[in-house]
Image 1 (tube, one colour):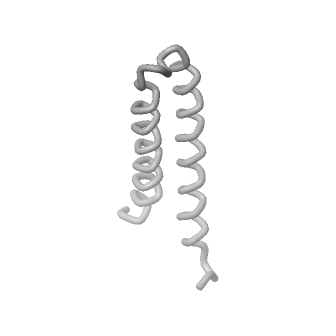
Image 2 (cartoon, rainbow, N blue to C red):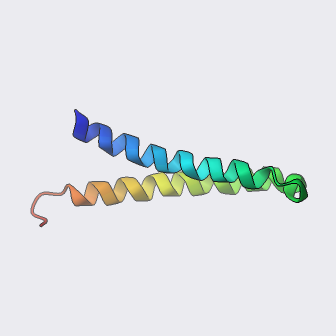
Length: 66
């Protein structure tokens, strides 16, 4: 159970960190007119981060690897 939780929790925390950075960037006063674009890019980056971290963890768990 814990090992499967690792497959979900670690990538989710990485994606949350990306979204928090996006929130900080989107609220810089000079960038407020571009906030919707920043949020779209940030959400896409968070999803890519989630997929990448999940893939790395999944690859480490394959049988037959060192």
